[in-house]
Image (cartoon, rainbow over all chains, first blue to last red; front, side):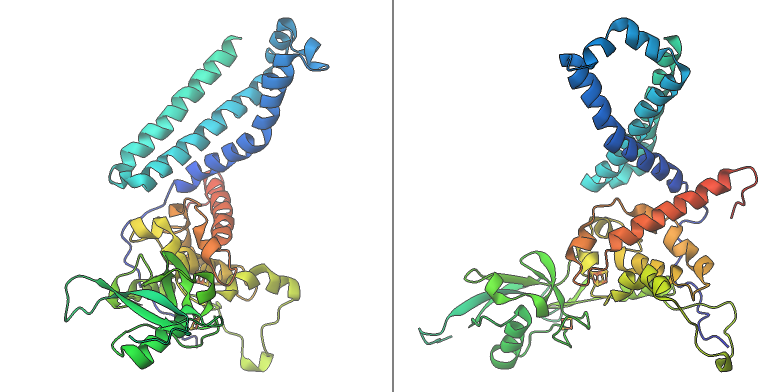
Length: 131
Length: 252
Ligand code: SF4
Ligand code: FES
């Protein structure tokens, strides 16, 4: 017989299922994009394109870029590049604000943070669709 | 205290709290002989044995194994048996009880809450059905051992609880060492108790409270890397959550 059948001794303050994994998944996916894709994009558009380094001189003409962005796959790519880091930031800001002592208004903080990210995500989709 | 001039000394500012005598904690300064090979615990033992027998603190092994001598040394959670005076000399050393715990007396903290959380994660091998003794031991390959070995090195010293800001502000947070220990058993090939630890590790007060500050892994004297264990568990937990969102997924 197993002696290890003690009941869970912690009082369950909050029951039910947590949805934190959902926000955390967006956070970590956004972190990956921000860490690996963003630097490349910043280099290409902000440095190489802006200063016309090497092949970037021809690649960054208006026509070429407009043509590129009208491709649906590129739109999806840009959408992911913008929206995921937005949720990454929202999550980080939400938790940092709790860390600096705003724990008393946790729920409003979460709502405002994620709602901002959601609004900006919708805006991003809107802009991309109009191109 | 008359010390010969040839004898080098070092000052220890020690947190004192005797609830039957005083309402507020105070600091008491002791001057102890300075020795290259002394650790803070040696200095405390010197005080207790020769200067002031009323000083209370916990210790046992003096070699970083038992996990009982954790204190704040100059504001940093440390095993006092591993904190050498020479790393602080000639400055004074401030010794306080571990933060984020109620103080019982002097340097002794109350660890009831930690013990309650520790028990909640069921840190032992759980089998659906124990196999009869005659069938021998549960065997494991070196690769299976490697899965959890690092997380099994924890000595329950609670330094990580003092280092963690989330432990400080969320009373219910299960905390680094206990979550790492939960993973230690969940990752053990002999264990079948994952479902019983689900609520404690993956519930509201478990891994999701962690904001990946990472201080727990910095202060850990045993290189357990509780922050790593928690991040691993988050990836697992997130995958499981996503599965429940699928139309054919099971909502638990
Ligand atoms: S994880 Fe490390 S710091 Fe935390 S209790 Fe265990 S040994 Fe101590
Ligand atoms: S006295 Fe045992 S760990 Fe320090």
